[in-house]
Amino acid sequence: MVVVLGILAAVVVFALGGVSASASVASCRADAHIVETAVRAYVAQNGASPTTAELTASTDPYLDSFPASTSFAITLNHGVVEVAAPTGAAPVPASSPRACTGLTGAHSSGTTTTSSTTTTTSSTTTTIAPPSPPVVAVALISAGRQPHDQLRLTFNEPVSAWSVSITVDTSHAEIYKGMYPRARNYSPRHSVRPHGPITYTWAFHSARAVDPRLINFYALFRYPGRSTGPHAFATDSFAWSATASGVASSGTGHF
Image (cartoon, rainbow, N blue to C red; front, side):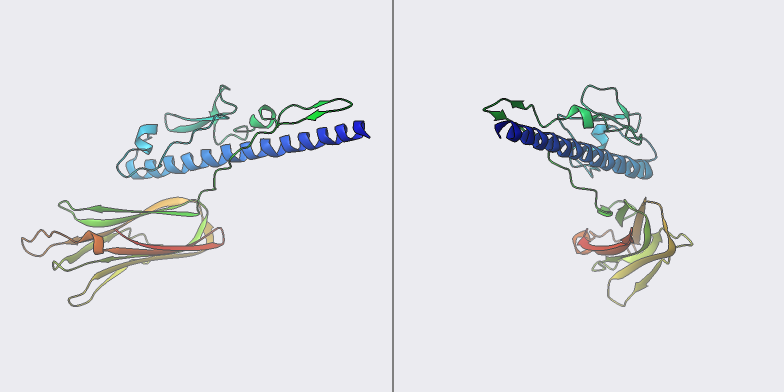
C-alpha cells in the first residue's frame, strides 16, 4: 500500500509540473504580445523603431513598465521583439512559433523522492500576466499654435465596427478648424451649437473584420481673432465603442 501511494504521489507531481510549465509559456507569450503591441503603436505614431526607454518614457508612455521575469527575458533588437526562454537561451523573434516553448522543458514542479516510508514534493508558483484588452484608449492634448485633442485607439484584435466622439469646450469662443482622419471608409462629421460645445464624431462598420491597428483621432480648433485661450482641456471629453473579435467594449473619459 505504501508503494502504491508513492507512485500516485509521483504522478500528481508530474501533472503539476505540466501545469506550471504551461502557465510559464502563457505568461511569456502574453508579455511578448504586450510589448509587440506597444512597438506597433510607437512605430505608427513616430515612424521609427523604439528603444526600451522610449516605450517606458515618463511622458506619454506606451508601457507602464517593461516586462521582467526570472523565467524568460524579453528584449528589443532594432525594433524586433525577441524572447529568450528560458533566461540565458538564444533569443528568437516573438513572432516565431518557437518563442517561449523552451519553458516547457525548463520548468518543473520540483523533485520527488519515494521510499517505503516517505514521499517529498515541492512546487513552483507562476503568475500569469493578464491578456491585452481588445481596445486601448489614450487621450492626449496640445495647447500650442495648433491646439487640439487627440484620442489614440489601439485595436489589439480584428475589428468590425467602432464609433468615436470628441466634445470640445467652447467657453473661450473656440471655433471648429478641422478633424482627422477623413478616410473614405469612415464617417467623420462635426456639429456646432450656438454658444455650445463642438462635437466631432467618427464611425466605421464593415461586414468583414479588419486587422488590428492603431488609429489617431484629432479634434482641431482655433481661437477667434487674437485670443489664445487658455483652453479648458479638462472639460473636453471623449467616448468610444468598438466590436473586436465579436466582443463589444466601450469607454469614456476627459482630456
